[in-house]
Length: 415
Image (cartoon, rainbow, N blue to C red):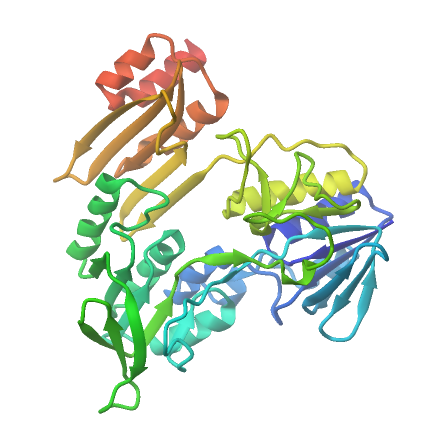
């Protein structure tokens, strides 16, 4: 049996290693399009602040790791898939046959249609090559504009701020991290960043980027409110889209990502999908979602590989879960943090102390939560939501005082 994995990120690497253990005599091929060892994008911010070197981003640190496991690693990009023939065509002219295929191609950054985003000092922060350019340009004291304050944008924000640049964040939505936080938490995060010397402009869009007339190394960033900002570097973090272009005409069903079932199978025989490219079972809803976080990617990779090897394994669904540490303020959201129809909400806020807790209930269960400045409750919130523990009398107590969440968890699980 020949297993081919397209995508050498966390999902692909875990899948390759799982296949090697589950099917030791089978052929395993791992294809990654970047001319780098397989690495974690989540480690790039640590490289930007010089906490690790480039090799610190690598998913496996041992030289010859993949060769030692008998995993063939090819550096090329998938260009066309022919499911009827079980053949994958690559951009280097090669074709690779397979018995079972895993698509773990992840996503790519979206470049909005704004003039000037192709200038040399404008970069995404997505690849190691991007990170090298940002590391070179984001010198202490330089002026940097960050477009986007979503989840990825806020991770980049911290790395840039810690490089001692003069940072301005421009976010089109009315608050920071709008897909992770409500108005209270988003506003709290904005004030926190501003207290750390970061300028935050929400509800504002970049309309154009152009070379500054009086300086070769400076850009002029035009905003839709008529203001302009001078910058040595513009970093674009305005969203991502799945890497599915090579699947055109294959019959693989795609919505927000590649639709997969609870065995990570696509709608085409012998083809599976995992990680950021996959739209899989969602724990919080009766449906499927793309959860672009590394824990989901590694879980996907393991389950898909077991099924490819003929060892039936079911995926119970990923929990929508995002945690940020932004210049010392930890924020997190879990599950149905926006609430559910017919549900109930409880919240507690300390604006001056940058502490916030919001709980979402459905019947007798906790189904979602937001917290800020409450690192002690992150594991408890996830545990209560994912285990679907009945709260009993604790529901009313938590509605009156959400800070009792740890006591509720202990009593409901051990009492």
